[in-house]
Amino acid sequence: MRPASPVPTLSPRPRLSDFLQGVGVLGRAFGLIFRSRRLFLLSSLCAVLTAITLVGLAVLLYRYAPGLLESVWARPGSWYGQAGWYTALVLGSLVAWVVGANVAPPLLLTPLQDPVSEATEAECAGADAVLSPASFVRSMTTGLLHTLARMALLFLGLAVLLPLNLLPGLGSVAFTVLASLWTMLWMAAEHLAAPMTRHLYPFAQVRRMLRERRALCLGFGAGVYLLLWVPILNTFFLPVAIVGGTLLYRALREAGDLPPPPDARADAK
Image 1 (tube, rainbow, N blue to C red):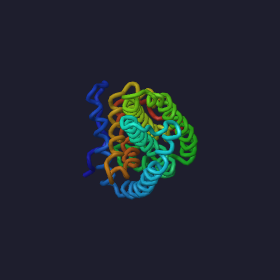
Image 2 (image 1 turned 180 degrees about the vertical axis):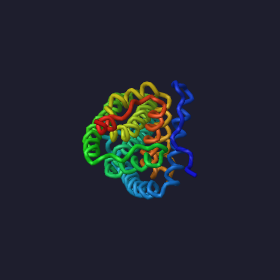
Image 3 (image 1 turned 180 degrees about the horizontal axis):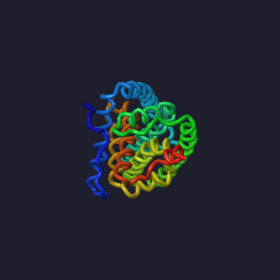
Image 4 (image 1 turned 90 degrees about the vertical axis):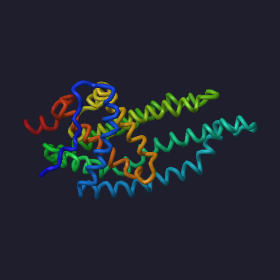
């Protein structure tokens, strides 16, 4: 007997409780990875490479973050000045680590992302056929352009928020909170866009889903963000995010929020 589909069933209309359903997609992703031998092997390889990258980022920040901060803000002599300086150092380093974790591993694991997403769809009830070679080439080209655009958008948003650190008192706290929210939303876009790019959806459709299913997407992004802070499990954050984003894409398809994929229409001609 075939197991129940891992794809979540979405409500016909957006609602605030969709946030919890978005977080719950990660649980479905973990369950699917441990049920599928192919997904488990691919995810384990991703996890090893991700662990090496995350440790490397932590070492780099430990060695160079204090010097970078001192280049723009000399370490104060007073105790309260030093308290503010170290608060800015810790909060800034945390944000930098999260941003680095969302840039370095995806770039390193680019060749594995599509196989993980394809294997996820193969495990879903009624999954689409594997892409033809021509469609694969088109999706790779589109994916590169989308990835560059999404990374530029992430850094643009953080650059807009960065001056908050110059405000005395709660400026660094405000930056950390707002930068975290921005990164959560970006994570949702990044991992939802991966399967949509494979099927040649324009990025405008990704933006539309973020707008129309805001609570659902933010919940998914928040779950991936929190997963980064759980030791050991955080090494699986990228494959879990890819699997989760693919399940979310399938759910939006089944709910009627997304039209049929462009690659299916192109192959039908």
